Image (cartoon, rainbow, N blue to C red; front, side, top):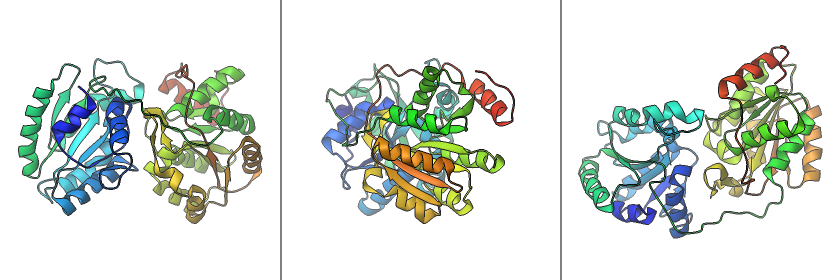
Amino acid sequence: MKAESLVRIIGSDFYTGIPDSQLKALCDYLMDYYGIDSKHHIIAANEGNCTAIAAGYHLATGKIPVVYMQNSGEGNIINPVASLLNDKVYAIPVLFIIGWRGEPGVYDEPQHIYQGEITVKLLEDMDIKSFIIDRKTTEEETAGIMADFRTLLAMGKNAAFIIRKGALSYEGKTEYKNENEMVREEIIRHIVKISGEDPVIATTGKAGRELFEIRDANGESHKYDFLTVGSMGHASSIAFGIALSKPNKKVWCIDGDGAVLMHMGSMAVLGANNPHNLVHIVINNGAHETVGGMPTVAEKIDLPAIAKACGYSYVNRAKNFEELDRELQRVKEYEGLSFVEVKCAIGARENLGRPTINAMENKKSFMEYLNGKDVKK
């Protein structure tokens, strides 16, 4: 089904969400048709955030809003769905569009497997009626289901379309780019050179994949790195937990702007505790690149100023490799919580691979390394 046909059938004029590769056709269409428009389309910080925005839209207009997201975001909507939207509380109707990663029987990455298994059940537990759209679903069938959904929505209940892989299409050629010069893979290569044998925690998405391939290319062990393949937005908190328990090790967190925005409150916790041995590097390309390139709000805000306000001891920004190397050397030697924003272009190698070790192997070798055991791989 064409993305524009789904939008027409739904008939809403307000969308808010978190981009997902399974929903790329829909996301690209919304960007081409609306762009980022406060009256019609908002990309939020996390899925709970967009659910609350949708609730506010309904309160102000009486209309039905649409929230789109990957199924990994279901956990973030449980609280606002159960304690805000539910018809036993305020009875605020919202239509969800959910990309189904990790669908049983369909190969996917390990972080999506369990989430895929419980996707439908979680919706049932939240009293959200759902319908699965696949490649064979017709516009007529979808229109019929939407008519049923409207009856539920009119009663203050919620409903969801679950989107299988390849179910939506869009023929537009949406391009996402910025004016920054540095490429993320080369930025990470510079970080690896300075961090040496310090532990590195990489955020969700392509950053971890690039880190893995850089280690391979350098002939270095992967034991130094924890690849946060899921749990978007929590890499800095993982790094904080490690830094607290290993005060004699310099701990590096390679983060992304979309991840930082998703759970920005963690920066306040880091700043208030001010671990002396943690380096927080945010590679900011102003985009959710791993899932298609749709923009974040990070290009419009001052992340270093936020870090400083949160209590980070050292804060700076790098816009080129000369500045980057200078900042990396400074934070390597600095005693105190450090923050460096690195301005980055959008884009990655088309042949970028995935780690050839699984999540459990990564965890085991990383833990053994942290605890002084000899790990070669």
